[in-house]
Amino acid sequence: MKKNLFVFVMTTYCILLTGQNADSIWIVNNYTKIERQIPMRDGVKLFTSIYIPDDNSEKHPILITRTPYSCAPYGTAMKAGYWNTYLKYYLREGYIMVTQDVRGRWMSEGEFMNIRPFNPDKKTNNDIDEASDTYDTIDWLLKNIPGNNGKVGVFGISYPGFYSTMAAASNHPALVAVSPQAPVTNWFVGDDFHHNGAFFLMDGFGF
Image 1 (tube, rainbow, N blue to C red):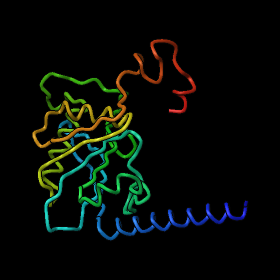
Image 2 (spheres, rainbow, N blue to C red; image 1 turned 180 degrees about the vertical axis):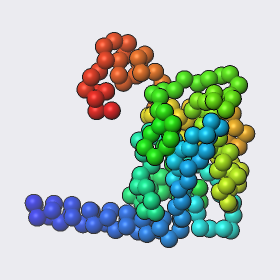
Image 3 (cartoon, rainbow, N blue to C red; image 1 turned 135 degrees about the vertical axis):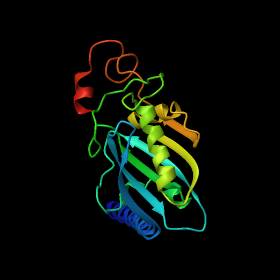
């Protein structure tokens, strides 16, 4: 019985591993990765990893995730393992996939602020928020990434979900879809760290 179970587990593992390797090879053979420092209106540059389909037979929509958790690996290495999830289906559909280190995190310049408040006032060169950073990123991508079709979506889970919400507030005309999934909203009221009370030290420490 134990022998049969071992054989079953190993066979299943090998099948899954073979499928993942095939997906990774497909990504490497069908996408080109570039990295850019995209300038914001105040001069700060945000590090951005961009996966562009090699297929030139049609123009492609852009999907963006903005994150404080790093868009590593940096350099020419393809983040193949990252795409071996539901995200690989976006690649199969030919999306231009963009991941960006938000302001003040990892390879991006500027000062990081937890849950930077939305500023509803008219933005000047020094009057920024996450909505304006998203707007400037979209604008740059549309003008500098060849083969895009002028349509942009932003998505993210948890903290990247917060940045997706801010993307909706950017009001960029090319932004046609936003998907904030389980977004961070308020560190004190009803969120992970306080629940209207004392600071959850262990939860915050791990974060």
